[in-house]
Length: 484
Image (cartoon, rainbow, N blue to C red; front, side, top):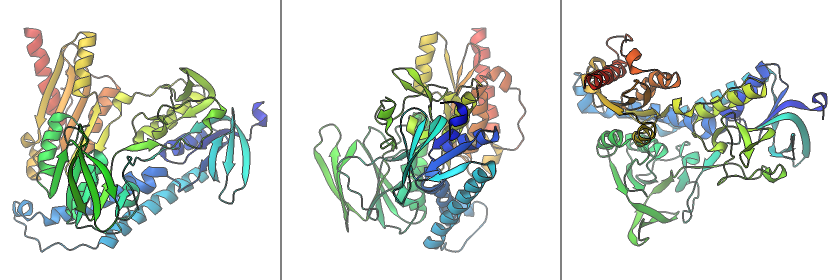
């Protein structure tokens, strides 16, 4: 088929952040683009994820701050008892979602992207099937196709959801009610953020983690400090090494807690509600991938760093995938970056993605962030490449701005090579950690060294000096090493 005979230059299946950035970038470069979406424009992040959850965190964070009489007393402030309206907090999140969804849609329309409502699927090479809500089916052709269908919450076997008493983050962002006692299954970033919201609004939380320690995916030094403040310092009973073997909706909700190793019943728990925060799974069913011979890995589409979909390690011509459905870093900004990279390669510009330089953040109060390698991965790399690993820790309690805010319980951990000073990664817990990590992410992206970074001037007094101090501590380690 010649290019002139294609319906579109590019069809994107899925209008989340990955699909949005791909479609807009392609349209901005003169391509004829269509984007297919069966649900709300904006995907998970805008409608059921990062956007509404941050609105809830912002509102509940204000409640937490005003209710912390001991903290306010440190400033000489004495506030009245805090009152809040649950519905108005929920309305704030809903209004934000509606605004961003509308802005995103208008942006695509202004760019000239054709928005097609319906369920998309592949119908062989360079062909996309579209079934609209009325059941009308048609097949469109495109020179290139990008799959950006995202992910859905994972509900383990044995857990029955009803959307009201047992639910996932998809329903939790609606904040329809505040259970007196809620169990949260999972202690990753989703579980932590909602525990932050619920405890600020007066709920009692039991957190159940199947792995050996709470917050298993976080740096151990960071999680130790975070657990002390975000879990032990709040009305949260955290239990590790336990599996929610069976969860039955109702009033009350009944949970069978099992020992992970023996699978023996440890306790029968009865709570008012359960939030299932056990991760996410790719939304790849129904894509008719067999029509092009693509085999998924647990539902994830295999891709290379150019975003090309692979079969047995070889790229499928004109087929690309971005976002959560690829199983890389399941973050909205990763999806957006992947979308741009895919289009750049479609345009003939060779561009790869550097996952090491993509930061991640958990928007608790205070925040947690990270970028680059974990300590375990950095040690493994050091052995493999034969260099000494440097590790320094910079504390917020030595930072003037943090002390002024009476928020000095924080830590930055920096990983670097002692031979050439290259920054390998960082992990931060503390006030505005999500903002602070970007500076380190830029350094990782550029493969910069602490030898250069230690001499960059930071504004005083700001929290960014925590990063500056880490660089200076690191260069001292390198100087001491070279002297030995």
